[in-house]
Amino acid sequence: MKPGIHPAYGPVVFRDRAADVAFLTRSTATSDKTIEWEDGRTYPVIDVEISSASHPFYTGTSRVMDTAGRVERFERRYGTRGAR
Image 1 (cartoon, rainbow, N blue to C red):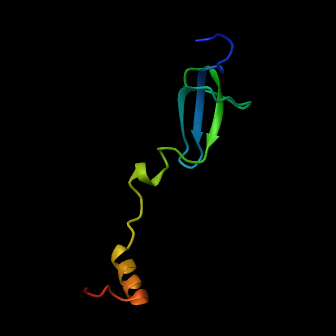
Image 2 (image 1 turned 180 degrees about the vertical axis):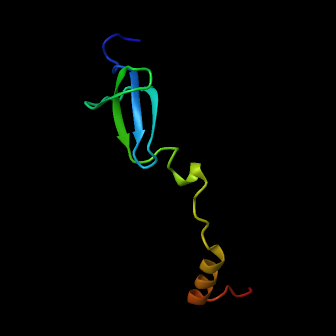
Image 3 (image 1 turned 30 degrees about the vertical axis):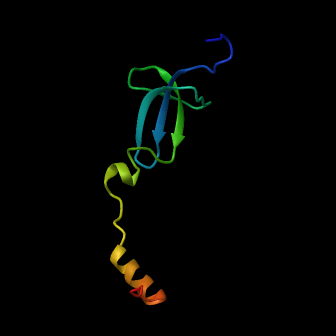
């Protein structure tokens, strides 16, 4: 790798405000805000709106769509398909 052309890669805390969860990882993203982590060190913190802790797909709280009602509404609106 060429020296001096890559962004700094270091520890960063990502904090999910919706689920009130934070996790420490490494990233090239930076922030002016900091947080003191469980190990006593201070790390930059990036607030995110959604993560795997709050996303409906990962938490299993996603809504099941009423597909039968949608099909019936479509058939009422446009009629059923005729036989050929």
